Image (cartoon, rainbow, N blue to C red; front, side, top):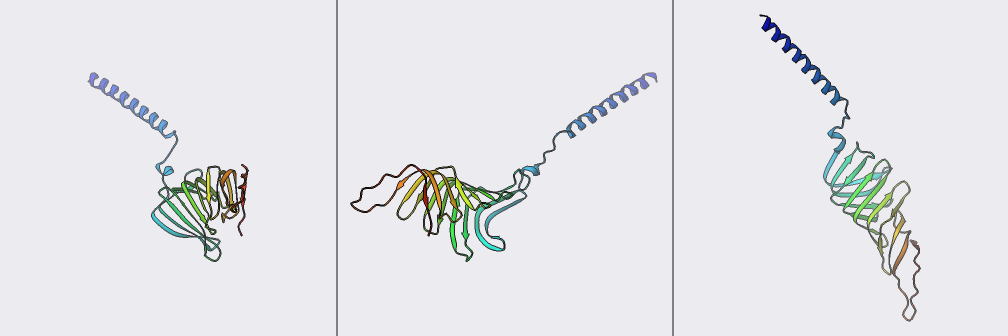
Length: 203
């Protein structure tokens, strides 16, 4: 009987120790950072997107993309278009004033800032085309800008350079460290172009 009582006492001590150890481990785990799967997942996912976007009640953009992800738990929050992006931009009379095409686009909704990446191609109303690998569109400041190499091709001239900046219509822009091909009359000696900023002004 004494042996049985002694065994029960030892068992009780072991059980108590196990409970305390498990409790300590659980408390230690609970005190760690709580990073849920939701923090890295988008709250909205759309495939095969074709939609119209309004600004102040007026339709200003048509957006087409294979995918559209909205991340509301990221810092900063943003939208992601990672499998191609196409956008048409309308004026007040619903005429297309520019279109944008690129491989990847991110929109930081709190800052109203677009980041366009990889094979960025834009065409304005004058028929000029703009090619680069990186372009930002600040909708608060109503301007495009890029530190990357930019190639601009128009009907009569082409310009290449870096540190590009433009209005939203892509009709008034500047580009630094530029070079290019410019027209000249037959018999006239072509003038070397300075390695400075080239500025184009729309009509």
